[in-house]
Image 1: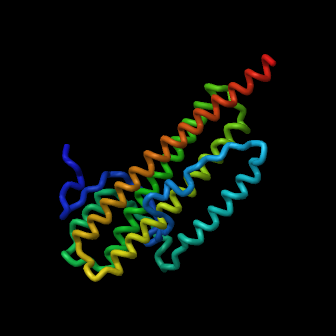
Image 2: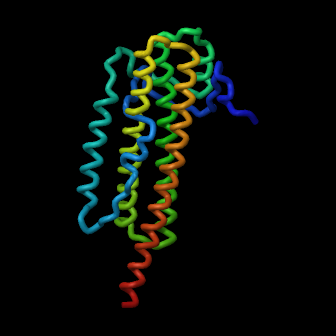
Image 3: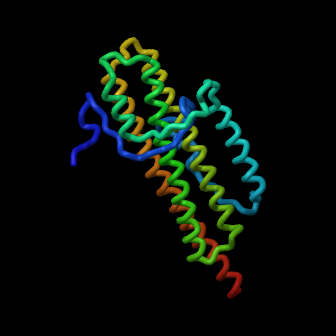
Length: 224
């Protein structure tokens, strides 16, 4: 099975589907941002659940303010699939209009972000199983999941910001060619795939280690 991005003149995304707000600009991401907020701190003595939730809450408000869109039809929903995006890209002329670039790029970013959000749901299930296996308390599991979630959130926000920077660079360039735009879409999607794989590995590794650590502490107190 060949590379779906092997041709520089066409693009073929997968068939994933996401419901999004029409014309809503999910501005918030960037390449390589996984480096920025990837560390998951593990200090229960200095952090309470309420303190961590407060920090996450302020981060969410900040992200929401970035994503606000005042377009008249922003409340209209539409189903977006990889095939729809591929068809839009493949129908472009040799010179791409700025409006076409931003529209297609926004759709691609929303679709990839949905996949990232689905990853969080998978990690929640992983955390539940790991906690049961090590008989960790609900409070301990919740605190560890909040730390993981904070890391995931910070990474994707930075990632999206950097991704939109690359789009702005292309828009400012004198040659808004179809080939360059397709290359941008390919690079962005590949970066999303790398981000998801890296964050999934880091999150699951942290959860597994933290749950084992809880079990060791429990055994120490029982036999000491």
